[in-house]
Length: 469
Ligand code: ADQ
Image 1 (cartoon, rainbow, N blue to C red):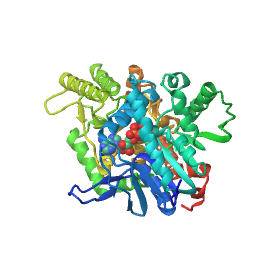
Image 2 (tube, protein in one colour):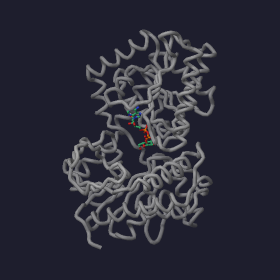
Image 3 (spheres, rainbow, N blue to C red):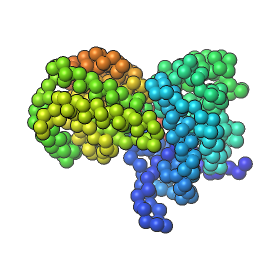
Image 4 (cartoon, helix red, strand yellow):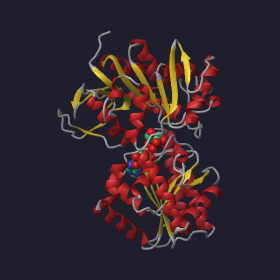
């Protein structure tokens, strides 16, 4: 096969860019916001690298282009492929199953077949771009088959894979039709990275159980090669959030928000994609119970829940939206007053500035997923609190809980425990809160997203690991 010229290739479902012009015939792109992009871009640019991914629009094929020194290679998907590969197999089968099956995974043969075909398209595009001996870094659950496909086409490459979501226990993984294909897909990589060591352990146990392999520590021999499985907890760009939190405009916005919500009312905040893994329903229900029991009053506190619209074409997400809206309506009806709602629900995406203003305004940040690979909102909240105030209520089933030891840790399935954690955070002594926040801030400062990317690439080896960053 003819080889390309890129020493470092990132492969992810989405390209790191968004279209900014809709003029017919005119293509204009801007870099997408977000930590992953800013973490990987310096390495990609310095190494004359490339990024392979989908533009996010069906039937869209703009062809390859360069932006800010990065070569971008769009992988086109038809509307039917978006239905079957993305909304189907990725988001209705693998996503729920890998999150403890908190919603019932749906299994369809056509989705699986399309998933494989699309993974092959990603692998082929990558194989064409990568230089001899290049480093390739594949991301996430949409592309589980790519490492093996790529290795078959290009045995010369160093292949890394990072899973952003949890990796399930063996018993759950075993439910997947053609489960061994997915496992072999991942074993095509030299290094498989996870958010938590628990996930790496699940993966190695699965390799033993399903393929009879014999893991030793974090390594396992497979087809004459060594595959390493290890935790690399992802993080955020602390300096970006810290800078926004220091911005006088953002601080003024935080003060305005507090005023508008009612002077001295204490503010509980949730910020999530509207996803059933995030525990939004359970959290709102717990707040309603605190109000009903008189443990918190509507004069004293208010809950703001910002939920980004997400995967709206998937039925389970539409149903979740309806349930959340009904519950918010019920609580506001029962406990509200004219001009004073207990719950403000915003089904909207917000800019980074607006999010940081909300973080600064919030007395208690609620991050209570039923299961979450990491959860960056928890780390963003900590990064924003340069004033060392505010409390974090954090689900024990997030990757973040393994790192942020100053949080009020709760079991989101246990509504009593949720209520206890929320009330404890609200009533905590300010000196205790400051000590907790200092500990968490120093952890996030030391472990930011740059360090995450550097550590992964160092362990993976190959040409990019030696780049000075
Ligand atoms: P997500 O499930 O998307 O990510 P998360 O880690 O919380 O979850 O990241 C969400 C990002 O979206 C954050 O940066 C947050 O600021 C932003 N966001 C959320 N709500 C928003 C809103 N209303 N408006 C604007 N921005 C909003 C997956 C995994 C996680 C893992 C990440 C990274 O599910 O477990 O932490 O990848 O690996």
